[in-house]
Image 1: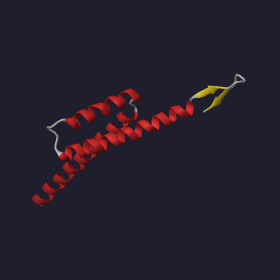
Image 2 (image 1 turned 180 degrees about the vertical axis):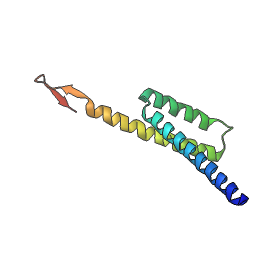
Image 3 (image 1 turned 90 degrees about the vertical axis):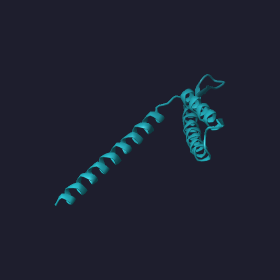
Image 4 (image 1 turned 120 degrees about the vertical axis):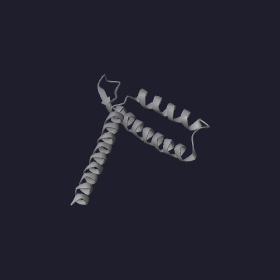
Length: 98
């Protein structure tokens, strides 16, 4: 009976920790999605600086590289969206989507 209670508490604690980690990831994703292009580029510069540091292991460099690729992909999506919203003035004075 005592072991069952301990196992139940351990499982509860494990589930709570997993839920917290999941919420942290969701929060991080939400923050990344609300970044401006300038903030994204600044993040990329920070990642590059960290990768250039001699204190970073190969594994850490690889993780930073993957984060950088994600930032580049998201920046590209933002740029595509902005490009789609831009309009140019035609010769006849009407606005036309690019």
